[in-house]
Amino acid sequence: MQNMIIDSNGYDKNKLPLSFVKNNGQEDQRAHFTTNYKGRRFFFSPDRITSVELEHKEKQVPELGHFPGPVEDSDELRNGVALELSFTDANPNLTPEGVSQQPGYHHYFRGNDSAKWRNGIPHYKELRYAAVWEGVNLEISASEDGLKMNWLLDKPLRASSIQLHWAGVDSLEIDATGNLLVHHALGTLTDLAPIAYQEIDGIKITVDCAYQLYGEFDFGFELTGDYSTEVPIVIDPIFQYATYLGGSGVDIGQGIAVDSQGHAYVTGYTYSLDFPVTPGAFQTTIAGSYNVFITKFSSDGASLIRTFVS
Image (cartoon, rainbow, N blue to C red):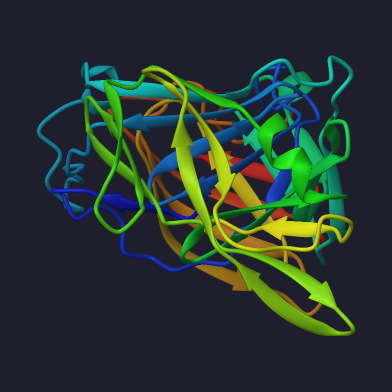
């Protein structure tokens, strides 16, 4: 499904390449992979896909030289919603797998406990759920337009096996153009009307397809056009290194430089009491409401070489 989010807040217009990051302990253990899209976090577990969204609020970042006191924005309560799309009566041994590993790795330096830091984490262009139901595979890819879920069926009659359940939503609705509208507390997800096709003698032949509701929060697909009963069919609804540095409060980068050996130097200031520092740092704890930091990364971004806080 391509989740074209109707968002009255106009949140996050950035168009960055999306990929699926393997969970090596940096996330909740129930998720095997994660990705971000327009301010939403997606978690991919064996039996479900979870979307987490917080109500958008502009972050107030103080200007340098004007520090009225500690920033408490990270403690402010905000409305949020967690939506779960689960596979009904599916294969109990499902495990999502990364497909087409991408160049580079993700590294997470959260807090001041180095035992909880994670580095060298791979990310992938696609995810694959093999045999969700008998004869039905699911492939998920990501782009700036959303998450695309391809259902690969070994024969058309398998379409009736696909039953999906939304939890955490207010209601489901199919609009006049065949889109599935998923209404929830913070807005609406719009899953564009599905397209199905068979490939026969090297030619893609379109098959009419539509969403079908099964009760209040369950849906699937119905093939409404003509098709070959013995040819596989695809139902195609549209739904370098990156390193995280910071603590639990507000952290603001001011500059970055790279030396001749590829080491990266990041400067800025932090309000986080648990900003990651290394042994032998000039200062290991925050003094006052904020402090300046200088951090040096290894050439592959996989480790902190030194952090100074002053």
